[in-house]
Image (tube, rainbow, N blue to C red; front, side, top):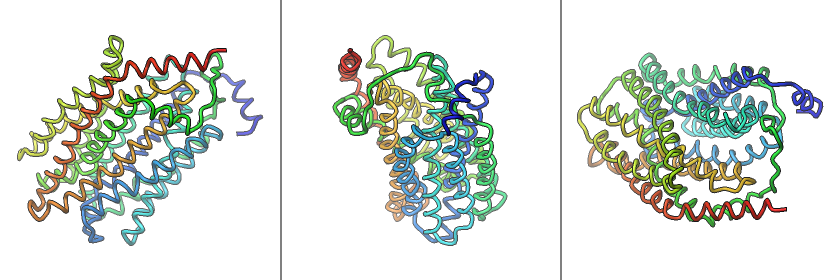
Length: 441
């Protein structure tokens, strides 16, 4: 963005209607992000059969191959977005991951498919960091949380559409997994043009009524400060365990119902869409609202409440995975998924609350780097590895016990959240003291 363009935009009043339009466009981008990310989980079976690979290798493909480069690319792209044109970065990233998704349909070897999924991950890393920054400039602090919440729904809507559309396409194209990738990748190219030519790049801090001046914080300073907070360390470790459980179940859930309950692709897609789309949304919305209210009484509830809900979700995971009735399994899965996502808003809000004002964006990038690498990277890989490990004993039923093993890790998440609650008040006082010290003249 040139100086002249920036000045023009700064002098231009952005209407409330246009701000909502931008939010709607960014929401659609995030939906496409998760459709292209999640669609691979629907076609694990056909891809595995065509290339003759193991569940461990498929777990590497759907998890680590994507997550490693997604998380590594996220930090430099976030820094680029702080200096460059965020609208153009999002449009470029959307173009890259959409093209890579289409090319996945033309992969002739497993190695080619893995490299293309790496490309999808790098492209998608250009989605959320600049989008968060844009939303903050379009919406003032009094409306920002609501705007961020609407944007975050893209995770569940995108995943639900991937399951629903993927289930339909898998049923229509049988074992042809290539055509769905091509069909689902193309719309992103059109939306990239919409972003590039209809979304304006606002000046930094446009929505703020007065400038907020704070000292700059380097990456090293931010990391050192956060590591000195016991509450933050326990929050991150606990979130890693829950992310490991969540991504393991999310990426292998479709395959679980096919192998264990022999459900049709369309039926699985419909149920998974309802569970992930509605259940995930209910969990995050309820989690944010209840955590905010409880924290007003005692800050420790910011971690105490997610810890208790996590304990409550575990019995439903056992019923979901061990029941021989597909109906009972699906209902239990829905309740489990609602409860298992309640910690998400608490994780992000507490991460921001513990950080000093000058380091909040970097703190968010660090948290996402760690949690996504562990959860999205190792969760699916661990399930795939255990599928192969347990297969000689339980055959196709092995996936039951693989997912059960990963679900048990949720208990560790609850334990670390409880540990975080014990030191939270002291760490918040420490932060307040440092903010006062750094803001003193």
